[in-house]
Each structure stands twice: as structure tokens, then as C-alpha cells.
Image (cartoon, rainbow, N blue to C red):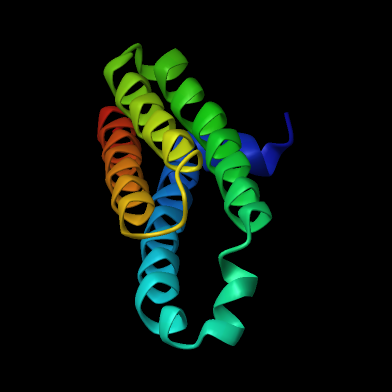
Amino acid sequence: MPVSLRNALHTGRLDRIAMALSGLCVAHCFVTAVVLGLLASAGGIFESPLFHEAGLVLAIALGAIALGHGALMHGYMMPAAIGSLGLGVMAGALTMDHGLQESVYTLIGVGILALGHDLNHRAGR
């Protein structure tokens, strides 16, 4: 494992990065649903299923690394379990048609995932 990744895991930086990305996801969902929904010509780019699938893959990768490492280091499985629930809700939202319901489920999943990362970060202190 590269030294920079190991350092990011030990200092909790990876959890903080993952929480920041969760915040960006919330902002993306809000902007897409509200602002870009009004600008239909530009909204199609960010509503692409590929965009959402790539975001979920990134969330799963960061979650697996940060939450898994935390569980191994501090021994608490609850943060990883909560984070996994959030990822599952986000994955379930991908199966829905674009619209309010998908956005709501995505935001719920992102919030649960961010809670898991926060708990993981606090447990590692």
C-alpha cells in the first residue's frame, strides 16, 4: 500500500474526503433536480445514467477502503455496516426512473453513508 494512502487512512483523511464527496453528491443532486431541471438542454449531461453509475462506483471504492480499513484498525463494525446501508440505498436509487423519488432516495443514501464515514472517523480517534 502506498505511503500516502496509508497515511490518509491512519489520519482519517480518507473518511473526510469521502464525507466531502458525499456533500458534493448532495449538491449535485440538488443542482441537477432543481437548477438544471429548469435548463433541460444542459440537464441531460448530468442526468446521464453513466454519470450516476460512475459516482456510485467511486463511493463504493472509497467506502470499501476507508470503512474497511477503519473496521480493521479500531475493531468497530457499526460504521462499516451503516456506510454499507447507505451505499445500498444509493444503488437502489439507480434502479428508479429519474425524478423526485430517485433524488430523495439518493440523498437519504448519501446521508447514511456520510454518517458511517463520520462514525468511522470518530472511532479512529
